[in-house]
Every structure is written in structure tokens, then in C-alpha cells.
Image 1 (spheres, rainbow, N blue to C red):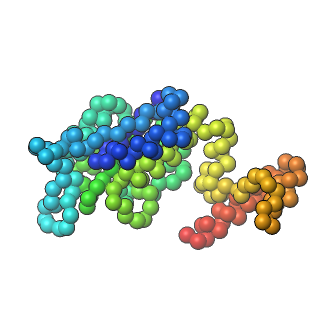
Image 2: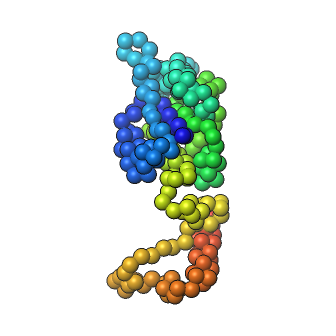
Image 3: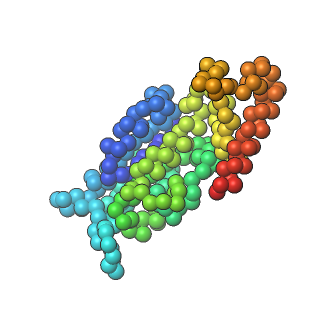
Length: 224
């Protein structure tokens, strides 16, 4: 069973995500364990302080090293072989190939969700990977952590409905996007399903889908 632990100041944000759809199913079927660790529980003093002003001056507050360190060590005690991932805009851009790689790993994962203006840099001593979901800034690492956990969990054997579901998805080969798909009715407000999909000719359908995947991929990468 793969174990995911998320260190956050807002564990309630994960309730709906971890308790719904495929994430819920993966836990029910004993494929994964999804947990949150409340960083506030490791705060200092009677007020459970977790942030402070940065040395050298500057706006905002930073997450302090002591609460973060203690939280990571607690997560490590729960799962000694787990890899620690830090959600940060300067990290490696997350992509499908990484999701596949991590889904095939035997290790569990510990996610650190930053807040405020960042974190004390010394926490990097405990971090195995710095990860980003895009070139933009969010108010915290919770949404990126949810995204990355979801992208890994859905690739684990037994989570998706069909055995080939993950193989035909967008980015599964790093180049193409998933082909267009249609269902009933055959015509809606003048919009028709492509004739090839109604032909019953599996070879022609496979060829059309392959061509559409390449076309979609080319268009996207030209835009980028």
C-alpha cells in the first residue's frame, strides 16, 4: 500500500479531495493511504507559532524551521522510506512522465505545503525533490499537492476502471494528446460524430485516433 502524507496548515482543504471519487476508491480498496499532518501541532509556545519575520528584513512571514523539521521527522517516523517533496515555484515542472515514474516507485511520499512568503531554506536538508505545477504563484502548496497526489494515485494499478485507460491519455508518451471522443446521440444541434467512428472499421478508427492525437499534440506544443 502506497502512503501519502501531506504537511499543511490547512488539513481541512484535503477533506473533499481525499474523500471523493477515485481517491476515495483507492483508499477503500486498500491501494493507498492518504493522510494530512497539521503543521500547527508542531508550533512553538502556547500560541503554536509556526511563522516569523525573515532575517535581513522583507515583507511577509516565513514558515519556521523548527515546526517544519519536527513535522517532517514525524512523517518519516510513520514511513521511514518515504520521499519528501517540497511544493515550490522554483521546483521541477510536474508532468505526466514524472507522475508515471512516481506511481511505479515502491516508496511513499511526504508533501510539504508552503505558506506565507515561503519557508526557512534549511528545510531543504530533508527534501528529496522540489516540485512546481507551473510558472505562477499560489497562496500555498495545498493545491499543487492535491494535483500531484491525484496524478500519481490514478495511475496505480486497480484505481482506474480500464486496464488501458492510462495508456491512451494525454501526455502518456510525452508527445501526443488524447484523441477526441464522442458518445450518443450521433447528432446534436447540427454537430455530428465523425463518420469513421460509426463505421465499425477498427483499423480505420485506430488510424484516425492516432492522427488526431498527433495533431492535437502538435497544436499544443506550437502554442507553447
